[in-house]
Length: 455
Image 1: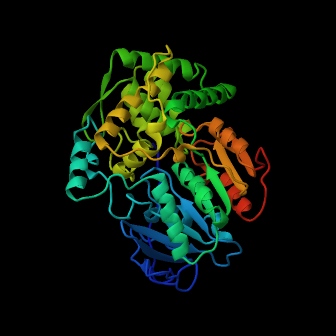
Image 2: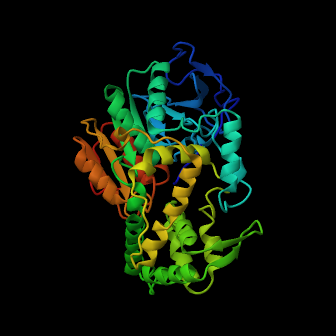
Image 3: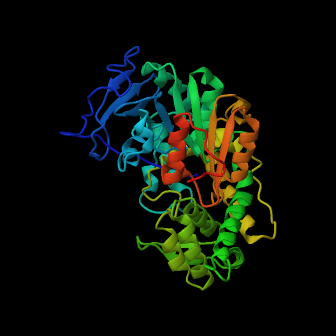
């Protein structure tokens, strides 16, 4: 479960939060969309940045519109990752530096229900003090939400997609482009299914097709990304001992003899093979993850596990939450309703320490879903989407979270899809890689990118 983030409004030179809409002068439908203060840090910009709240019967969503100086195309709805991520408080990702997308399109950011600055929040602040050990903090979070009469089952793919349709209507838009990243691609595909006529095109970065078993496929996906990283490392003689075989030895040792590692907070955390594999996977998914993983595996293989953990911890939390921007309750609600019921969720002794360590995480997930206790979504959320909407799919060979095989499967099942793969991309490249951003902006402007990319 992986997620990304966003930031605030401006003054003086900069656009004020209560300024014009970035979509039309005054979009109001049924009083649902109201002006709001922008949460988070101010970001200097000469663009108009306007914050709203979309008020609905059971939720209030935080929304920001960033207006391009001279838009030439329909607005772009950005659908953040997660589930349980956020976008509004991290709009600096679009403004500093300014995204090429804003050269021709207004950009709409939304904190999906249950997360970010939207309410009711399902964020589990009980987990923020230290890495999660056991389930007690989750029990406390569930009890607090239950005492406040917060519906833990409200965060699902279907509900979030329906919210986006409400937002489009509230903004007075006939159509828009979609930009989904990771979990956000699930929402984009659901929007294509239920509101296809309003979708001019969609960019699906690191897609999660609904029909794949995300947990069932994860071990093979992680191993595949590590093998490609190993091949690239050997090709430039940067890791003469390789990466995959030393990692297998490290994980086999940790499975037999877990090691206590002291974190920056001073707390001793027990690392077994499952915890170290999860840390490594989360790190590899970051833009600088390939570099850090190449450094960390030799450290761990050289009996310097604490140094390896510290290196990986620069970009990956050592537990499920350590003050990160993810709403853990929203994450659990969607995962346990939309994904887990449609996976086998079994562990198997394959004899490969990497596959076994990654698959071992499903034991924790099963326990968490039993505790969180939300109803499963209908089977329709697990079915493949068919459409002739123009779709651009971006996928990285080093992505351990959403493997390139998923992207290929999705592209083959859509009627008008272009797949762009890159051997050096990892997870959600359109939020960090200039080449991917350039391809994204070009596609929104009507250009069909070269495959492989020429940038």
